[in-house]
Image 1 (cartoon, rainbow, N blue to C red):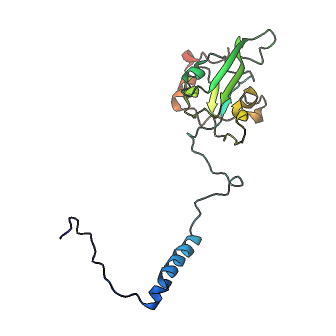
Image 2 (cartoon, rainbow, N blue to C red):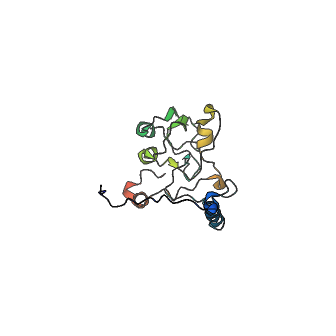
Image 3 (cartoon, rainbow, N blue to C red):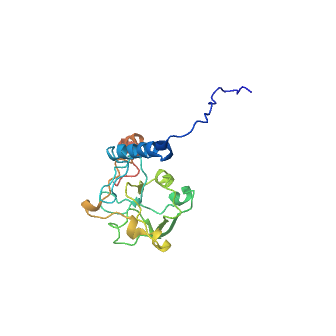
Length: 193
C-alpha cells in the first residue's frame, strides 16, 4: 500500500554492531551537544545581582505623584477605582483643613488610598483614567512575600517622597500626546496658578 505523503521510510532489520549495542555513538553525540552549550551565551541572568533592563512600556508598581511643590496630586475623584477592571483600588476621601495646603493640592484628597497588588493586573487603566496625572505605573517590581496581608499597599508605600532624590521618574510613561497636552496653555487645568 502506498502512503499519501511519501514521507515514510523503509526500516531495515539489520543486526546492531558491538559499538552500537554499547550505545557509544549515542553517548558521544549527546556529550558533544552538551559541550557545545558550554560555549554559548547564557540565556539566564544572575538576579538579583544582575538586573535586566525593562522595556519603556513595562508596567510595574504604582506610584502616587506629588506636584512640583510637594503636595499630593490625587484628589480622590475615584476615576482610577472605577476604571480598574479588577477592582483592586479602594479609597476614602477627606477635606483639606486650613494649614494643609502644602500637603494636598486641592480641597479634597485621599485620606486612605489602597491598592491590592494581588488583584491588580497592571493594565494601566488607572493611569489612563486619572485626570490629575496622580497615579503612574513605574518600572519598579512589586516585592514578593509569603503573607497576603502585605500586598495591600497603602499611601505609605505608594506616595513618592517629597525630597528630590526620592521622586520617581515617570517620563518614559508619558506619551507624546500627553506631553503635547501639557504644553497647550488652554488645557492646563492641571497646573497650579
